[in-house]
Length: 146
Image (cartoon, rainbow, N blue to C red; front, side):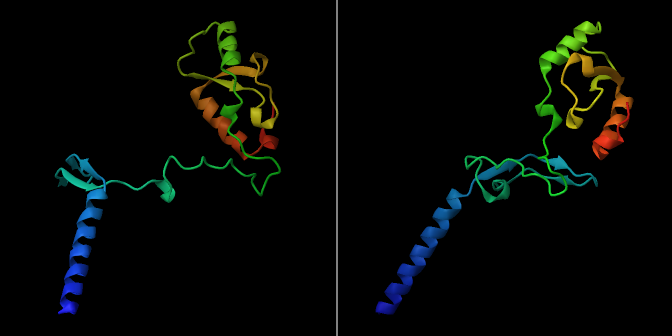
């Protein structure tokens, strides 16, 4: 008799915990959509996505990028060094205070190669020329010739 009571208690506890834990799972509504292959997926509910890399967004901030084993300097985006004030000054000085359609502001000597972020080191380039120059600059500072 004791064994059946214990079994019932375990069963009730398992059911309670199972139902209770399923209530904690966040649900997300997915609208109906058509896949690339043409099949239609009806609207449905699914489990909410888990945080990226298993850590919540409120966790500690990510560590800064470590230096690359191939270079002696840490890799940093050149956008971090760009001065919007210098860019605006260059645009005004060249007569295009709001930009120039089909063109981009380019650093003559790239910032990553030691160039300054001043209007004297800036030039207008067509978008295509800028993309071609960026490909060369990504290979290294030695490849850029002025």
